[in-house]
Length: 363
View 1 (tube, helix red, strand yellow):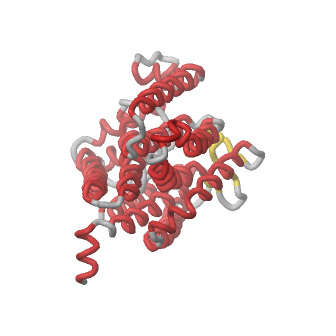
View 2 (cartoon, rainbow, N blue to C red; view 1 turned 60 degrees about the vertical axis):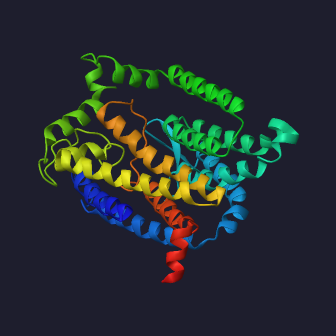
View 3 (cartoon, rainbow, N blue to C red; view 1 turned 180 degrees about the horizontal axis):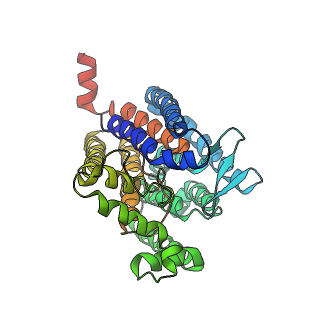
């Protein structure tokens, strides 16, 4: 019900936040509504299929899915790739564009737990070499994403991987070393890019008059939107910031429009929905007897709920602009389809929980 609530509310807010920009482009203001609705329908089909796939089926096909995800991500560096806001992370298929990294998030959640769990017993004999294959493939996926300058998505993949390594009983010594290397890598990538560095300084420093129209512009207008919403908001459809003041109003910064039009109450409802998702998945993960299911559920929780918290943190100014959408809510076909597929995956895995399995058998 939380997924349904977020998805339906997201369709409404995508329509509300995109009407002005669509009209300004000379297309129907209902275009985003129609496309988002279509992607929801496709995502539901993917979710239904994912719900029916047995656990052993995922274990057999996920290594090939990971290889495929890396190859598809690598295509973004070819002439088929498309630059959006400085990131080369999209593929132009002619009739539509897709973001392969969203598929990679899904695949990492189902592949990495199984790959790590299968090698735990070999560590005593082989040492770190036992994890060489999954580590190499995982790092290769990260490189494919960061090659397109998409640090935000790379960080989400790092969070998912961290959850998998942590829950899989990966050796703590190497866990600490890997964490240090990952943090150092992210910091190096952040400070080596003038654009990323300006975003960080704009978030945690003071914006000058010149920055107010450049690097600080988006975050400032996001705060204006939330501040003007008050407790109950200005009403659905009555946003002022969506009048081409706030860039990406229907994508990465849709939470700002939610705050403006529905106020504190609307924002709180969205956060509560994500809290319910986290509670449900973590509660089942702690009770289920299958270790692989536990690890996958924790990874999906970090992906969906963690990414939502990062998105909200960016909008309210806690984090610099990272360019990650809000799951189930932001406009975007790749994100919507894969998030709904992940929801279907979770429903299928939850059936392994003894109480849920018993209640289904009784019915």
